[in-house]
Image (cartoon, rainbow, N blue to C red; front, top):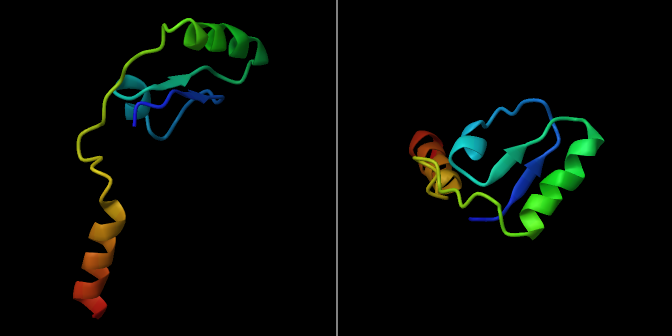
Length: 71
């Protein structure tokens, strides 16, 4: 979606949001927040893209599978 995201953790279960998307994993040290926001506000944020298979249709696919099984 091209929306900047800052993750205040040391790791993420979705690393592709950092490598392909616009997420920045900055850890749990509060001192990392200001430099990260500074980078964002001066327009130096990464552009990012949409990870493969992230088509926004997951819910639809799940409903179709459940309907096929139980419908």
